[in-house]
Image 1 (cartoon, one colour):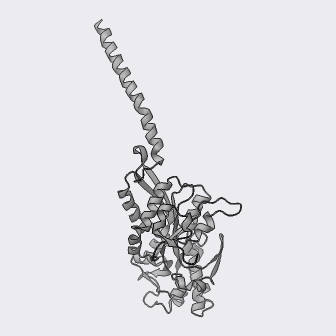
Image 2: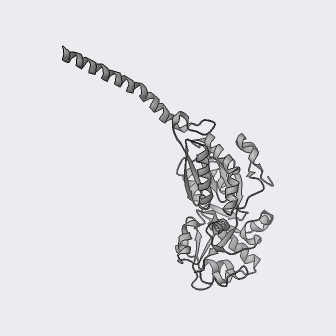
Image 3: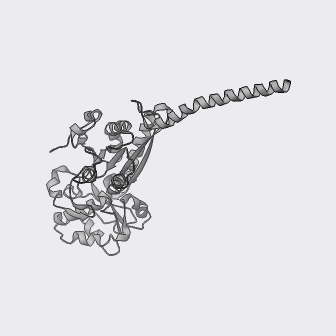
Length: 342
């Protein structure tokens, strides 16, 4: 009898524990399922964690890492997963390969309407963008570079064309700086009255020296494997590299020379691309998994992020510029002005 009483007590306790476990399981599943939601403060609903996915230009690595850390610190429950590379390649990860993205940021604003806006017979992934930073294309070098002791703004194209010089650049089919470099060399040919300038410089920039994004070649430059690298001034300043001070008529940095820039045209796998001022832009894809938190992140970029961008060598428009203010999410409209001339 005593043994039966003990067994009965154990059985009752076991049933109680099983009932307790069964009662808590649905709550756990609910929290996991609710991980994609967000409260207005940006924290994950149900105690889960939101992973915000960002696809961005390779030259945005340093400022975005700092911006992401600050955003995560002020938005508990949000973790950011960022992927960086050539802007064209990163956008195609979303539009052609179906990768889910909450935010897309590119080094040439025209990549967004060209590849993400709806066109006849094609699906649209966005219908607005905001220009948030500017830049200039240049060549960077180190003390190890051939001709480093005598290169300047008046003779750079002669030094870069000398025998034995190795020049790195990015792929014009995957990265804006790739086609912007070619546009810049076209403009330089006209500006300096040197018809063969582009051809002579590019002769020292063979296919072996091309990468999907130019930042992949920074280590090769610093190791002396290449002498010069076509890249943005922001990267030169971030990495403490010497760079050539190209005139504004050539370096794609100044909107007042837009008409001159438009004379430079480059054929790529993505079509014929016309020169224009370098303006970085951001958008939120229409199928973003976490649009509310994405809007909070973009607001953070357009506000507190400006100080970070300036510190890292980017130029800033007087105010971020919206392609179409009426299509912009309402909570972002206070940070922007209409794009000049539109």
